[in-house]
Image 1 (cartoon, rainbow, N blue to C red):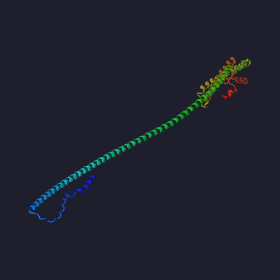
Image 2: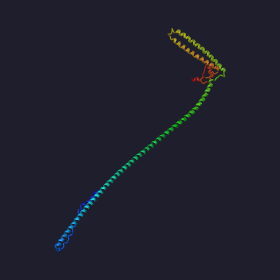
Image 3: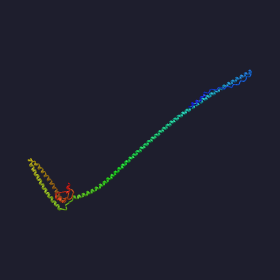
Image 4: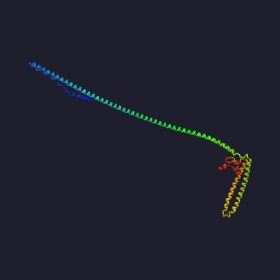
Length: 321
């Protein structure tokens, strides 16, 4: 743009006239012709011709000088225009180079700014991510700590409850041991008393009463043995009758006879057991232990011993059977 502007300004110089017209010589005032002689006239003509020639030569030299000056001026003008164009071109080139440099610098600054922004954003994202990770880590640690505290509280509660139960169990066991010790002591006392009772001889200091019981037992034994003999004899007789009646049993008397015979046999067996009991009672009378209850080991009353022969339990124990 500067070169074009310079050329626009220089252009009017080219429109200037190529050369200036030589200044015309001032017209000489006509003087009144003097009368001259031919010789003088010839000399004057010659001088005039020489002068005209000089004037023409001077004019030609002047024109040449003017042309040379014009050529030099045009050359200088052209050189000036070329220099101006070159300077304008250089200025344009410099301006373009500067513009390119500015554009490159601007792009570089923009790229650097974008890169810096990107780095800042990346750093910001990384920082945000780190903060988020730290927040999550803190929350996780807090949750784990809370959970651990709850676990510890529950564990302590369970442990405390366990210890309480253990103490309660120990207390109950101690109480149970004490009760068991009391029961064992009472049981030992009871067993010792029972042992004493089991080997007690309630009427050992009353031999007359024992002799009386012996007599009663012997009488009962003899009477029982007699009953056994009678029962067996009757049963045997009924067996003989049964064989005889087998051929004549229209009224069913043989069946009734069998029932009676079985009853007699059972009665005889019960009597034999009574005889055995009487023998046991007699042996106890001999060692002085007869009259002791086999259940509670307490003395049986004399009245009961005299009323029932033989007897091995007191009224209370007999009633509870």
